[in-house]
Image (cartoon, rainbow, N blue to C red; front, side):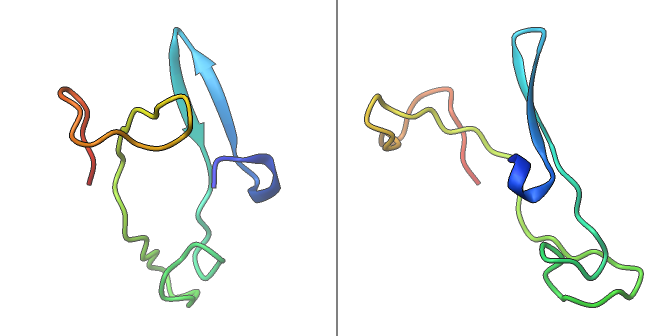
Length: 66
């Protein structure tokens, strides 16, 4: 979602990565698909460190996942 093909971007700001994206009522990422004044977007922010091969390690201390 935070990539340019989807209208988003990733920004490195002060040593932290920020993800910018837009969810539109009734749009592709609105789970109910209806332009009804309510955006339904199940999900949560998460952090998961990756290894050098792109696979997540099992149960890393200090990391979290929802």
